[in-house]
Image 1 (cartoon, protein in one colour):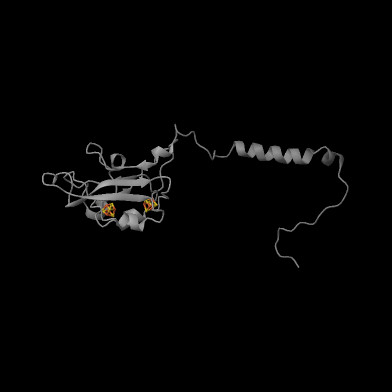
Image 2: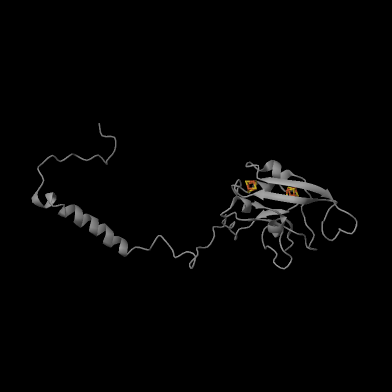
Length: 178
Ligand code: SF4
Ligand code: SF4
């Protein structure tokens, strides 16, 4: 019984001289090679050339500030609970008088760390956050590292800089461009 149309009848007839010299096989191979000369290249000259990111790309995390520049994160820990890789850790602290311009709420993350060796960029931390504080940027790749010491990203690398605000995420939830 024939299961597929791909089955081929085996040809047991003796090989011709040309076949013994691999001439048909070489010609077929050369034909395939020549055909590829005229096809669009699958590779690009990275990093000089870069492909646009996919619209669903999830890149390096950012801890957002609010429109007044205060850190949005309240160290509630929901992102850490949601993280399947257990990559997030934090230490909460209480806001002191005079720090109202730094932190939006009474509690904030004194320490906030993501272990990038563990992170699988699933985006569940972003979805779990009730304060619209953490986002995975759609246009930034996490930098490469050569040392295990470099894989723990703390607040110094995660909290957005006031003069370089990440243009991601927050407006999706609040309509505010901050
Ligand atoms: S992207 Fe996923 S794995 Fe990475 S820190 Fe967030 S929840 Fe954890
Ligand atoms: S990033 Fe969001 S979910 Fe995580 S601790 Fe801060 S406020 Fe809570």
